[in-house]
Structures are given as structure tokens and as C-alpha cells.
Image 1 (cartoon, rainbow, N blue to C red):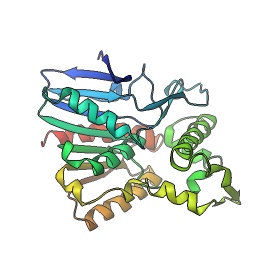
Image 2: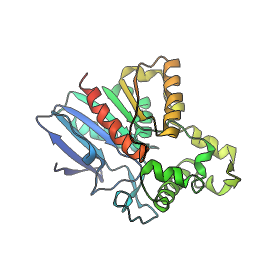
Image 3: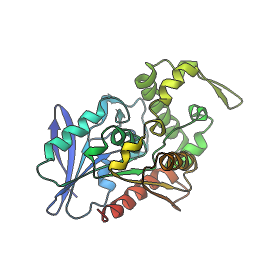
Amino acid sequence: MEFEKISLDGKEAIIMRKGKENKLIVVLEPYGFHPGKPFLNLIDIPEGYMVVEPDGSLGKPCNFISKDDRFSNLMKGSWFYGNYSDVVLRVIERFAKEVNHVILAGASMGGWGALNIASKYPEKFDAVIVSSAPSMFGKSFFNVKGNSELLAKMMDSDKDTAIAYFTDMLETMDNLFSEGKLLSTVKIDNEKVSLDESLYSAWKKEFPINKVNSDLSKTKLFISVNWFDTTTMLSNEKLHEKLREINVAHEYQVFLGKKKGSHYYGMIEGIRRGMEFLKSL
């Protein structure tokens, strides 16, 4: 399906349309924006929807080269932090007169961003779709090389690509969350990770599980994860429990997806399930 591009205050946004659209989906993609290969290419767009994928990058290329085309020529992402919510709000404002429903959807780190933005502006969205998004992570996540086999399996990639991709993500998060200071304090001894706890606490404040609040009841929330995507699934279980504790109604699906590429293919399947969920609106 062909897509068009528009500029929003200097930021690019990619648009796909299907039929006579009266509903808007703003898509936040996984870490690593690629203007020529938008994530929405992987989405089966329902009839009557306009899908907009804004550029959530920092305008800087990722610091690695991969033979895997899915991970080549990516830009560092920022949609999980800071003023990216302003970009999403500008998209909504741009098309407000053309649509009667607004949906926010995100996969992986895009889902992280969707949760945080919806927690801040729940009244802006009729529904929020969150696919394979970590709601938190522990210190072991900083041991990228030690986890390289698991990460490569999750992404259905080679180890070198997995190490480079997740290292780049952590470096970007370090620059955003802790002014580039935390990673230099990380020490790994027999797979046990230690780090500066005060700097790590700044990261924890941005975890979706610490951002969600009872105001999310103002929107319809859909969360999904592949059961074989173990680490993400465990964090989603904690998120599910937190949402129940604060009385936020939501649909939570844990499905049996692929074992190899459990995270990569799981987030695509989760978005597909989210599109099915939208039929209930």
C-alpha cells in the first residue's frame, strides 16, 4: 500500500489511508525510526482508517551497521520520553476535523510511549493499543552481551545485530534519562549487575508501570504480548496487576505466538489483534 508524507513543524509524518476514513490511528513504532520503511507497512489497516506514523527520532542515526535489512539505517528514537507527546498532539490537531475517533497504538518501545502518553492525556484517545511493550525492566537488561543469545532469539536476528541494537537503545535512554551518566557506572560480575542506584531511579520514574494512573479509565485500553516473549510477558503481568489495583478496565491478551522471533513477530501479531479490538468501538 502506498503512503504519503507530510511535515509537522519540521517533523515528518507518514500516512496511509484505507477507504473513506473517519478514524485516526497514531502509530508509535519500535526503537529505531526508518523513514523509508515505516512500521505501518506491517499493519493490516482496517477499512475507514487513516494511520499516521510520526517521526519520533532524535534526528541522529543509530551507531551500528547491520546486514539485517530490518535493522539497517535506523534513527535513534525518542518517543518514549520527553516532548514527543507534543508531536502526537499535533497530529491529532491536524486531523481533528476529519475524524471522529482517535486511537494511539504502539509496539515494543512504541508501546512504552503509548502507555506514557495516554497516561498523561487519556481524554485525547478513544482507545489505546499496546503491543509487546515492556512496562519495566530489571538490572539484568544492562548485561546485553551476556543476554545476546536470548536477545537474538527474541528478535530473530544474529547476535552482533542484537548486541548493537540493544546497546544503542540503552545509550539513547541513558542520554535521555540520566544525562549519559548511568551506563558508565554499570559493572557486571558473574552476570550480576551493579550500578548507581540514584541514577537508575531516574530511569524507573519513566517506566510505564510507574506512569499509569486511574485516569486511564477515560479510554479503552488493549494490551497484548506473546507468551514466548518471556521477559516482556512478565513485565506485562505486573502491569496487568497494577491496572487492576487502580481499577483501570482493560483487555489483556497473552497469546501463543512464534518461539523464534518471539518479540519481533509478537509485536506485529499484537498490533493485528489490536486492530480486531477496534471493531468493538
